[in-house]
Image (cartoon, rainbow, N blue to C red; front, side):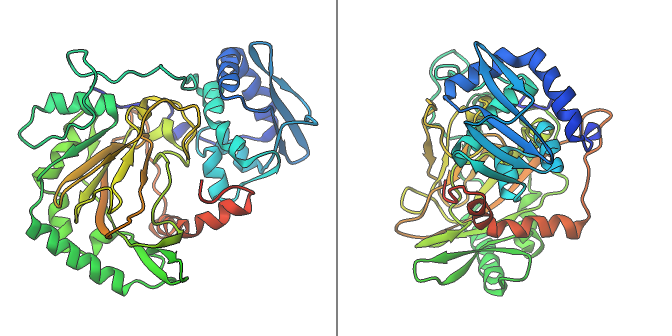
Length: 408
């Protein structure tokens, strides 16, 4: 059951000038997908958008049942300012509307920030031919055609084809009793030590604030480098079998990991992440679906911030952040015990619920797809890659600076 959704190659990406985007790329996309994109625009009831880039501006708006392009800014609707780099990234799916906001590469000068985020699936319909999700478009079924039991959990002894079917349909898994309490205690001790050693300027941790403005380390990046106990588990057969589950060529040869604590009373920063897709910043068509694996170092229930997922959302072209008011897919929470695993596709909508009674600990790792034939996955210099990841701890402030709701 393939979950490989890739349609683009890394080697084909380039810096596209604004004139080429406005005069060639978008008109060609409209020839293919003007009606598809317009249907999504109307379904989501979005305003026309005027995109300003340097000295030029265009407007995308509905004309009857088709999306049209006007070579000028409109006096109404949504207005955004993009750099040439930002525009190039947007049309190639290197960055989404949210990804551009997170990196301060867009400014919403007129209209609502939420509409800018809402335009993302319309851009994907226009540029990639992916229909904007509409209510009723996705049904979740088991192998016999019956409604899928979304409360189902699995064990290592269960039929692998059945597990793969569930993942393909729902976009997530809950697998019980993988690691022992003793193994999790060893990882927990290492995580406690790493949190205690973290400093706000170390470039290897994320921080969040409480209602009393106390700043706490909540995520240790590259935690696998700090925990020998965790490194052993990452390459254990009890976890590695997931790489071959779908037959898509996921690889687990270089397993990194991040260690998270979920304290109580967090009010600021990136601890309890809102609804998002892991490809929500961009690159869906280049790497989805990778598989994100959560190791429950401590259990997670409704009082300790269980992981929330939207079943079937990996099959839907949705806005990359927040819950679209028109979304008919119903969120659920994955309650786990110590030593359980959660797995979700990189384009499954999910969130970290805020703990209310007791904190919890979790480690996240995952499996990525190997490069497509003839393609090469680019690798940033290690220092640059790490600096980019570390900077996300302040992303809420950058989103707010664009005029957006940092808590959306």
